[in-house]
Image 1: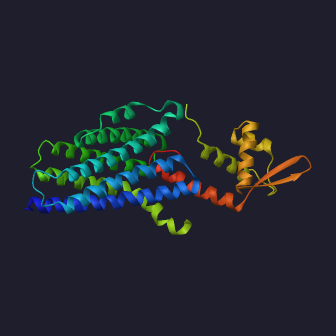
Image 2: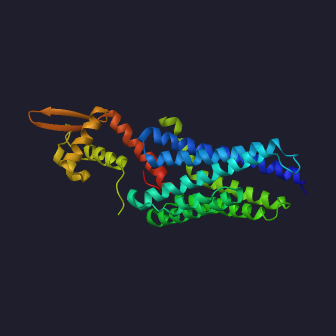
Length: 211
Length: 94
């Protein structure tokens, strides 16, 4: 049985691994934006950059403060909230991409925007992240019904895994001593990002040919 | 109603010039209007932008202008297809 410290170490390392996965999706999106100047590609780039930044920050702050006892210094709390804000903003941009695509420019839903107002503490940010993710899942599934592409279904499944992980992580705030809940949420999230990354892989492999 | 994005409109114009240029001497404005489903004033603005950015080549014979897809335009279309596929994978439109 792993100790709490080693679980936290695994959690932080997985955060950093997740950050690299997400950054690679951001990179492909950025190439897409550079080549065709599509706002959709820009929104995806921003979304995945913010998500990657959030994961990276969480991972680094976790790795450098593994042995910290309560009370946690103010700057660490500030960085954790900052990382959570980046993640929530990333999920917001992901949801925003769907809003812009599905509703048309004049009819973008204001509901996810409204939810941002309440975003201050980490728990609220996690709840908002789940909210945006659920929106993204629904829109991706609707898109799958239209285009019937297995890759779209894979992305939706990846988002479901990420949302589940976020939900479990949210629960973990209720049980702060149960690090296994945290670890489980992170492992599910990494699987989620790998699932999200699989359809993107073929675009990464084509990179050398075009760029 | 789902609107076409500017990128999609540009791609539609480029597709039209590629698909209906049967004699490789370019196609006229009327054909592009019909195939890309655009109004004349809007198309003229887009054509002007596409010619100045090098995606289309314009040849003028008398009062008639013809438009032909350039190498840069072909490259743009192949990139568009590629990233259209990428966006569709995420359930999005370019």
